[in-house]
Structure formats: C-alpha cells, structure tokens
Image 1 (cartoon, one colour):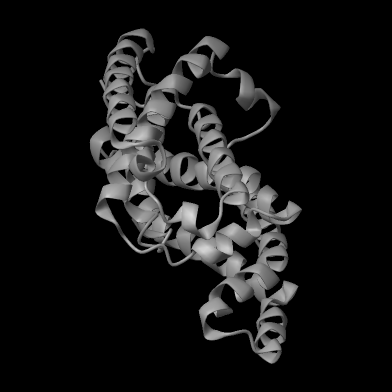
Image 2 (cartoon, rainbow, N blue to C red):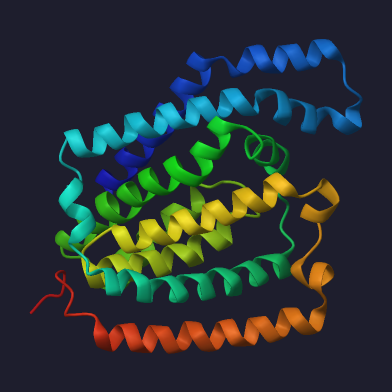
Amino acid sequence: MGRSIKLVLYYFVYQVAFTFLVGIPAGVVKVMNEMPTSEDLAYAIGKNTASMTGVAMVLAGIAMTWHLIHFNYVKFNKASWTEVPARTILLSIPFIMAAMFVFNIASELAKLPNLMEDTFMGMSRNLFGILSIAIMAPLVEELLFRGAIEGHLLKSGKSPRNAILLSSLIFGIIHINPAQVPFAFCIGLVFGWLYYRTGSVVPGMIGHFLNNAIATVIMGTSTHEEMNRTTAELIGAAPTYTLLALALIVFIGMYGYLNKQLPVSPYSRS
C-alpha cells in the first residue's frame, strides 16, 4: 500500500502545484472584487476560474503521465493500443455503458451533495476544461489507478479481488466530491476487472473516455435546474426504470459473456 499512497500523493502534488502556478487565486480575487450576490458566488467563481482550472489540470495530467512512464510505474506506448483485440474492446463498450447507467441511477437515489457542480459546469464550457475532463482525466487516471496501483498490487501477490477493490476504493475516495465517490468506486470495479482480465488499461481507458465525454456534453448543455433533476424527473419514472432493467440485463449478460470469452488473465496465479 505504501507505493499506492506515494503515487496518489504525487497525483495531488502535481495538481496543487499547477493550480497555483497557473493562477487560480488571481481568478478568485477577481470574482470577489466584482462582489457578485451571495446566491451567485459559487457559480461566478466556477465560471471565472474554469479556464485556468482546465489548463492546470491538463498540465498536471501531462506531468503525472510523464512521471508514471518515466519512472517505469507503467508501460504505455503505441503498442499498448494493439495489445487487446479490437473485438474485445468493442464488446467491452456495451458492458461499460450499461454499468454507467446502472451506477448513475443508484447515485441519483443516494442524493449526495455535488460540491463541484459549478466548477465542472464552468469547465465544460471552455476548451481546456473539456480537454481536462474528457481526455486528460481518463488517460492519467487509468494509468495511475489501474496500471500503476492495481497492476502493482496484482504483481506483488494481492488476490485479484483485493487488488480490484483496493484500487477502486482509492479511485473513489480521491474524487472527494460526495456525489462522485460512489459512482467512481463502482465504475472503478468494472475498469479494474477489465484490466485484470486483459492486462491492459486500454478497455477501461476507452470506457473512461466515453463516460467523461458524455458527462461533459451533459454539463455543457444543461442548466443548473436540469443538472439538479434526476433522470426519472427528466424523462419520467417508467422510461427510466425500463432502461434500468435493460441496462441490468445487458450488464449481467455481457459480464457472463466476457468472462467466458476473455483469455485467462495474465495476472492469474497457478
């Protein structure tokens, strides 16, 4: 666990360092000087600092990716994209998409506070924010939490179940935002299982790209009122729970199919 904790600390250090280097404090001071009403303060800060936050997160992601590859925590190059057959990746997509829908509905039912809503909505409306959420976060987080942390746990003798659980738990906790933690943990289990079975971060990375891209589009095209409504409130309870039932069937069915079709895990112990 020591190595895992060290890598997570590096992850946060890069984020904090680039946040201050890019100048988030200056943006906050600017907003405070404009004296927005207290009702609009959080959104004003999120909107005015979104671009700088996006730049900081992109730079921090690049730095962390370099760190992981340069110090041999993970191996990731052009060949990494062809290690897993395209058919396996394509079959993984409905499995991941179904899981995303199921876990999203479960997260909505939990009704946990979304402390980062204004920041993410602001970021989803500018280029660097979009790059940060939809591209950089999936890349660096899969390399870190699946490749470097889960991969190390598996190689060091942890059982697959414990390696997947521990890496997913860390992945969930680092999101900090209550509304994101349960979803991140659950989807981390899916990405972690795919990593264990394929030995590659690519299937999870593709799924992570899809998840974050969809979230970015939704945040970028929705109002605050729409963001605070559940799927059932937006499209109706009957359609929501019909889709939920279908998603559960797809999720369970694809898990069983992939479990049979995927080769023996490269991390399986004799």
